[in-house]
Image (cartoon, rainbow, N blue to C red; front, side):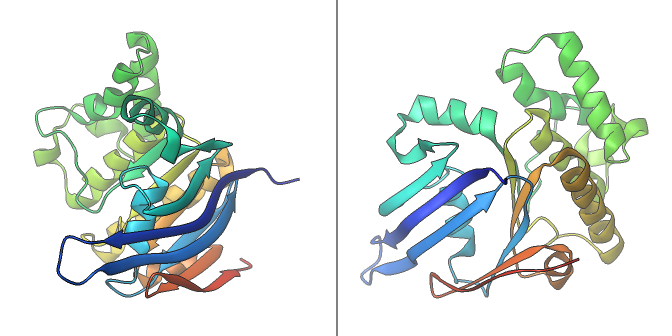
Length: 231
């Protein structure tokens, strides 16, 4: 029996900063099970990134609920939400968001440092993950010495460092060439299959969609289709 780890219930997001209200997400209902490799797709302005940000607790729904492992994250106080995100969710952003003054190893270790894990454990986990993403020989390199594809692989290793329940990847291939994209997706797919890590992408990249085993099409803030793909 599959285990449901994420339940999105009638979620709306309305932006009222402008003269005209923008209904970015309009009544979305979705459930995700452990071990999924899913892509949320749609054109720019469709609401897919807003939805991903609400799943990750980076933005709050105007109404509706996001429930992760039986916890309604909208009911958590800010400090509790930060702790919850740190322990349950890994993030991979389009812009990498690595800390430039830290090495690859230190970037991966950073979240474990915040979690209060012992140095020996942090070092071993960071080394293992960087080897896993093919950067075992670059663990002491700073981001400026790495290519875009290598920086994104460090970001993936960092996202996995805290052993999250799932990883949210917002347009992770947008700044990568074809070879780097293929390498990155192969790594994520391997982690998904071998470690049961759940991945949810927000993307309009056909290469990501091709790898996904579930494709959720979002338009005008609503789910237009939700299909599981056999591979």
